[in-house]
Image (cartoon, rainbow, N blue to C red; front, side, top):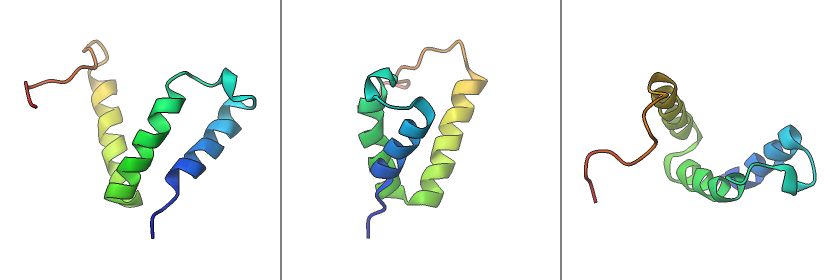
Length: 73
């Protein structure tokens, strides 16, 4: 069974930013489906670790632009 992370994440955005949704950050519309894909693919435990690792990289390297590194496909 797929965890409905998108619904829960949207509810949390509403709790944090309130209603109406036009006061939410513009990235919320694009990030919610992306986060849902990650959670559905990895599961809740592994995706939580994945998000924490990504956050740690951003905190560790605040001046580094958030672009793709390494010349991959």
